[in-house]
Length: 207
Image 1 (cartoon, rainbow, N blue to C red):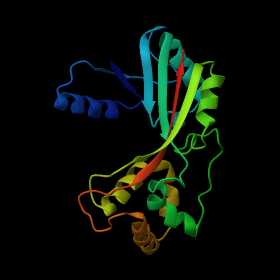
Image 2: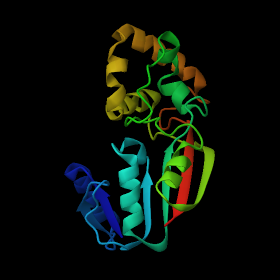
Image 3: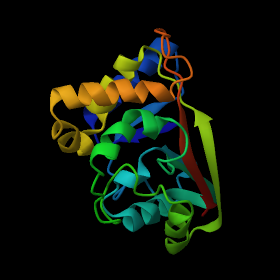
């Protein structure tokens, strides 16, 4: 098994987690998905979770994935689904967007919701020449192992493309929005876990 990332820092963190778990059957490689450093037909399976929407050139990356797959090899992806389904979007950004809608970038730009529309990722896989394309859209449990304030803070830290939007609201308005966001939680006083659900689109294909 080989894990790749464009960031050496992310790979180092993955190595630490693998070592802590006692995993010895995985290697790590710095790689750009648009120019994979592997021979043709090297892998039986290529999979990516919550990453394909950030490729600058999606078609180039998908063609690279097809190139390194063995004939008949499988590839599978997970991306965020419609933000109005599940409670994750309503909790994280719903009250802010009710105050001022977020201006979405052009559909071909890297963005977390780039393939939120069901069927949009499947269409890209077919364009890349992949076969037996399937897609499944689901709403899944998406709990954070901590209090709601921590869940909100980690979303801000990780959603870098959306930070200018968050920062455009005064602190007191963000605080009021957070209080409104608590209304979507099934248990508003629980401190050890924040129970949310999220819409996820899964797409798979064969080389």
